[in-house]
Image (cartoon, rainbow, N blue to C red; front, top):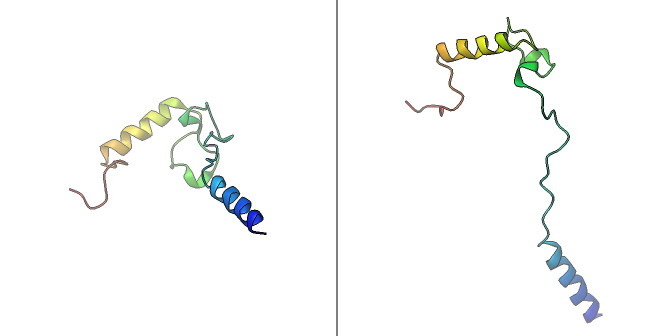
Length: 76
């Protein structure tokens, strides 16, 4: 009984050393960002999905209006 407990404890301890695979899933890989997500809630008004010029225009407009996705909230 004691040896069974030791075997189970060793197996449990060694299972904690394993690492799960961190491979990328089967998401939308290889699609350009201007294709959009297909969800209307994430689409800015006036932007046409699939149109690269429209995408770049929206990014330019966001930059002009001061939106910075990398700025921390509250830092000035």
